[in-house]
Length: 283
Ligand code: PRT
Ligand code: ZN
Image 1 (cartoon, rainbow, N blue to C red):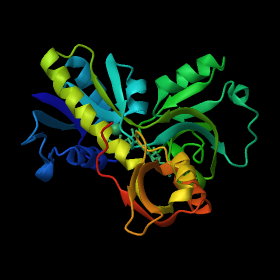
Image 2: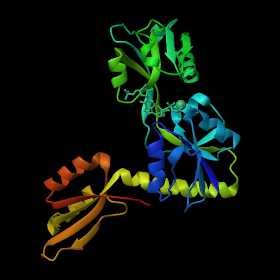
Image 3: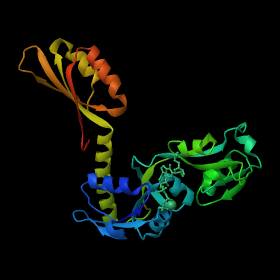
């Protein structure tokens, strides 16, 4: 049985449980439960505060866990980072009151900086030969400049709207982060095997989120161009249509190139283009 630590509530809980569900593994902390055993996979989930997850994994109380990279690097525990999970994306950034001049990182010499990430901030400042006065606080970092506690803040940002509504301007990113799977450095062989199976499923689910299945009709004399545009997983499937001189082409397209590819296909004679989501993608 593999023991996995998951955030009890908060920004990562729902996405973590949804990813496991997409891997056909059902767990839930319904009714404030602290543990849940999956019925069809050798997995037991512990629901914990995200800040505690790296320590539990280092100690081997949990074998693995899903937590933000920002927390993993801040806590600096001996754990292995196994795989990005594709959610919980954010960045740790420095921000200053928007009316204030910012003359680069060097201008933070002697500044008072409020943060919940003192280790990451200290490391970043040391690399840039800046000595500043770090005020560690556990929450509401964004209000500290307004109340005169700090000149600058170092906090997580996703949309940026919290900074804007507090009159702050993002000036420097320190770390790009997302949720990752971490694991104990010395997992026993049986547990390693279960974790590898789980990661294999997660990869298949996450890959599918970044791809679409595409079907289209093309005149046979345009097939060569269309196949060049649609490389597919190995190569596209080409099937003859009942109407002579036409074929149906099936392939897989990366989400981030999607519109570009569609425009290119149309310009090269493709018709009746259908796009379908993919549930799992195993390569
Ligand atoms: O109770 P527990 O300790 O488990 O949870 P928590 O309150 O410490 O963490 P939680 O649930 O807020 O966040 C968990 C993880 O989600 C973080 O460690 C990050 O890895 C990730 N994450 C992603 C974020 C954000 N986006 C985010 N925007 N965590 C926090 N924020 C906060 C940020 O601190 C700021 O207050 O949201 C605000 C900024 O958001 P925008 O959209 O206005 O820029
Ligand atoms: Zn926390």
